[in-house]
Length: 452
Image (tube, rainbow, N blue to C red; front, side, top):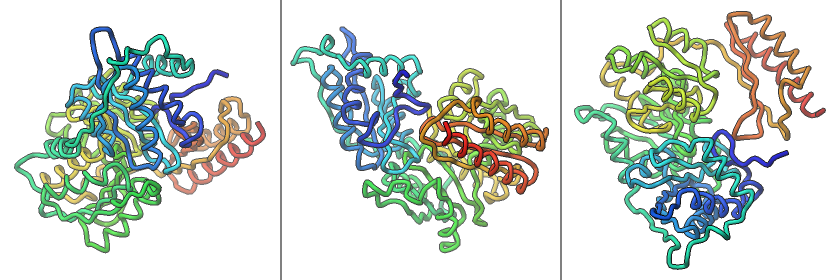
């Protein structure tokens, strides 16, 4: 079986184990250098990271590999993934690299690439890098000693990104009447996020701002909104904001302590833009995991929803293909192409806060335009990923659920592209029914994959 490095969001895995080893990172730096170097151009590449302990060794290995091929590197340190995309454009660099495993546990890490325009590299270029890494023979491409690259530490990346994010919020508005609970997941936004909201005059109660290399996403951030639910009542706050480890995801909590997920946030923003005539082509891009309640609410308002495969890469691909400017996922990736080229939790949060202020509405009131269908999601850890269509017991459990749900529900079973997980999602009109079918399918997955 051919070795495969890249998944749906770069290369990802357990740090210090294949494929996330310093040796692979060094080769990836060299492969990227080979691709971006030409006889007439000395490229520069931005490198950012989150707060994982293993980021230090991957940062050093990537810089060594890139410099050995004649690339100059710009090191920005811990910075949100959307911040690296922005800095790549701001410095007119040839590419950007983010060292992060996003929402995963600290023991995992990952490497993903951005183009000069701030979009994730096309799969064709990822395949070229992968082929060079697996061959791992760069002797014919090494430059003369006086042509190797140098590394420069960029000291103003935080400030540049903070000002960029603040620039997406109207100058005539202020957050001074809002009390905000903020959870930075002990991740890449721990330095920049509090400044954004404080400098716009909000009263901010910040958590998840003490990273130690091991506590990123550790029962905090976007995957654990119960933290800000608890802190909301403690501080009598107006709204809660939870980011994930690389701050490209956003989950919010309303004034009543109810979670407002990516589907609801996307719907709030889409409706606001639609009313103002700003929603280009009256299209919003979701995914196959988008809640049916969200889809029906948008269609009833006159907004067309196009469903992409799961992954912000695919959401953006559909946005570009359909000339749309707004898209996102239930998990909290929300992309405003007028502002940034990837999901940006801080930009998305400011757009929602802007709508709250402009309409003098509470978050719960804005979210009320959507009535989500009951949905059960079960994540099953797996050691292998046999084709789901080859699992007869799983197929039977899915078929039974689909028959009983009829046109008022759906079933999605898929492997994660970034983790060794099988995801089972069942959606319908009754919570009890969705839970029973999801549990039955999950049981079949566990049983049959163990037998393979």
